[in-house]
Length: 97
Image (cartoon, rainbow, N blue to C red):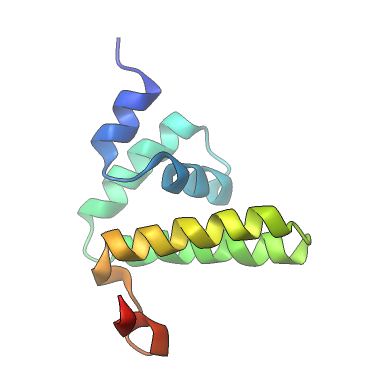
């Protein structure tokens, strides 16, 4: 039997990144691993994942969920370090990594 941990390991993202997709898309974690694998195989899929994480951050900010915002900022930071193709070229912080 394949477990959630196996699916996460195979999809190319961390558990926290998968959870951000699950939150954004209102999907179960296991379905989010499939979506992650699919998106990472697409030409601009990593940018889509980046935008999902940013949307999650903005929603958490609107709900004044400071701890969740900080967690998601760490997730975004790790994602952008792991997937440099997703870094937006027009932000001053994008070239620092």
